[in-house]
Image 1: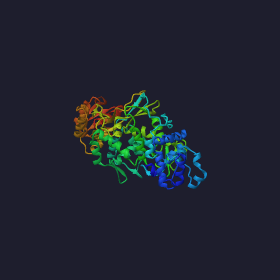
Image 2: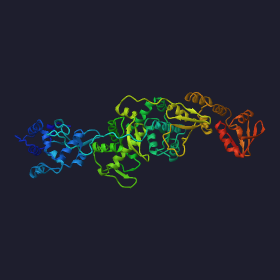
Image 3: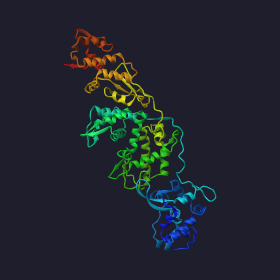
Image 4: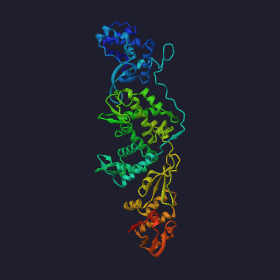
Length: 573
């Protein structure tokens, strides 16, 4: 901002006489520049500004401290909201009515003493009018100092943001967002999904979310937005399609680079508007807000936290309200944004709605996007409500520009006897994406009566339908087996190897008549089936080398077992 002499020269001569009178300065000139220099010299004398503040009321000193705490400048609406307005008074009225002798607010006290000024400036976020303290006065009055050496009272709400006790239950998202990104991208790769007016069909979205680790609809929308902005997805002819080059580059990157790409994509996204994604608020009208403004302000606050400490989220919200309440409003105006509370239907306008708008936005951003992106960890209270936050090692590194933290060692797939493939979360994303091309997702096994925790792995089934999809993509049994050996521990169940080999050789050669007679075209196939430990007991009396009786009661289990081995069984009748 401007220095003291330049600031004083902006005032008319009538205002300069007021400032001189209030500060006991006897002007010897009627020339504005010379008068400005005389007043500046008096205010910059040793201890002069501190003495001037000592003659102010407690409210004016509190206003001064708040302005210092904000870096010496605040937007006019924010400052006057807390410390009173500056009444518009022309030179004639100023001299005639001597309004400075009865200042109507702490702001006016400081104004008529020449301790604060106003000017238009672009401090980021566009041109706005600011109240400011000239630099020389800021350095002449150490924060909190008074002539007696005592401290002025701190402004309300400006206490240090102190760490909180560790929560009983901590939660972190690991890389589950990236795991679900793979599920989304593999689904689009399988079948380019139709869009209506640029949006998903609800039936497609519901089906896709069923396979996600976390099925939150806002999280799904964030994933789609990131996939588009990072170049993994593109709209082509009313459908979403994979951009293979960009996706391949990301899938082959290191785990740290993959996670960082997602965080950086959200941090810089203009298309993703956190305020308009708040489930508890509904935005109406054509007004615009800048999502980057709010995002950067909240990240600045989080960057000041001790990475090893827990903080109450309510304290973080209160801290931002005290230090930077207008963090998402460039003009510090609380009218013009038409936001309706979904629960009550009430419009939220004015600074009195700050907690219901800004407060909710801060809580949402911490507990949802930043948590999903693995930038923070959450402390969970009873009822699964997040009440504490801590920077994750990844979040601390991103916000401080430090070296990446240690990442988990890559995990390997585990293939079970029953054609189930277990994929720990740390399986490389490139391997996970390839696995999804020939398997179907399964729900996480869960013990009744036990709390549902973050899954240590995802579960996938090699099925008849998934193998048909693999065949249509040109994949062979040899390729699938080679991949499973490499991405696993090198050992595969014999039954799986036999099943995939039979699938390639004899897929579609088994037919079951509704009359409970199983027939095959090749006698060797029936011999293999009768020798199988699962299928053999389901077969009845041998009719010929290519046919065998089957109990009607065993038909469902037999069809399922044949599908697991890769045989395409058909019931006729």
